[in-house]
Amino acid sequence: MKVYIVSLAAGILVGIIYALLQVRSPAPPAVALIGLLGMLIGEQVVPPVKRMLAGEPVSVAWFRSECVPKITGTPAPTLVAARTEAEASPDQPPPAAR
Image (cartoon, rainbow, N blue to C red; front, top):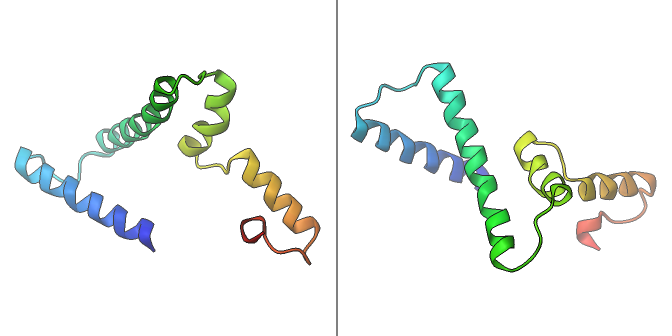
C-alpha cells in the first residue's frame, strides 16, 4: 500500500510542476514514455555512484544483477532462487520469514 501512496504523491508533485511550467497534461504518449525512461535511468544512476564513492568496484555483472531487474521489472536472480527453493519445499517457511 505504501508504494501506491508514494506513487500518488509523486504524481501529484509532477502535476503541480506541470501546472507551474504551464505544460498540458497529459503529455503526448511519446513524450510521457521518454520522461518515464528518463526517470528509470535517473534512479539507476544513484546506486553505482554510491558504490564508487564507497570505493567498491562497479562491474557489468553487478549492474546486470542489481540495476537491470529494476529497470525491466524482472525479479532479481536471488529472489528467483529463493522462490524456487520455497516452491520445492512447501513445508518450509518463506525465505523472508526464516
